[in-house]
Image: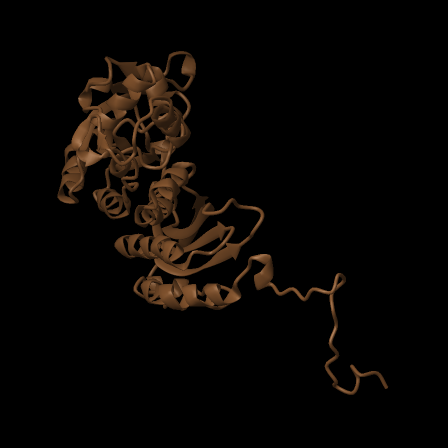
Length: 368
């Protein structure tokens, strides 16, 4: 009978004679356990009908019946925050990045008419830094709490050799629900004369940062110094301003009954994102002087010598959300956004496309 059959533990030595553990390879399971213990209260605080978040299981549970939807369609979204992470890592400022991650996902849900229900995150790094990781996840939890979305789980992966020291990456996943027949955009209802309403962004949000970082490096700007366009603020603080959360205000606007569609202005700017929600045969006519280009964008335009056309297909240019609204309800929708403490502007309207092709028609120039 072999020692294994007798229940005797035999001692083995790896080739080369050196015993190695998982921790020796760079993965610390105990650090992961400590992180879960630290962030669990933040996740618990995101509890909502349908979910009572408790981290540590193999999957997160959500009871859709508890939400009160009668005949829901589920809407799912996933995203990251791109190379904005490089600035956050360089500056050792991680709190705002969590909101960026949530916003990039839940804003994509609400523009389809959906209420965000739950969120999961994926955090990958070379060596786990508990304090830094906790700051990110606590920022995620706080943003989830603000939009009524439960943080029901996630994954922290420690992968030495794949990520450079100090580097990490993030991905977010969110699911929402909308009653059948109420999903947006409602392209069949869109008409010539529908009004375009722009809702202000909080800054650059989470797109275009490869260009932003190139501008900073090429002109030797010091991130911790006062911003050239806003001496009262540090440049890094302006560049890391978190992506605005539009969930509450957009849902309020939807309840007016005047919304026919929304565009979340992310990568590709206004030029690439607004056409995604317009039907064939209609074009968007936008008056570029109808809102003011925020100083950070005017600075980027000047530093990189970017024409308006390039700015409009790279950045949000001060508008993080654009609504397509029934003409007779434009005033009501704008008022709904104002009551939600948003800055909203009438920026244009829909018109017939020449040659029955979708077009973006800009009038005037971006106003600084």
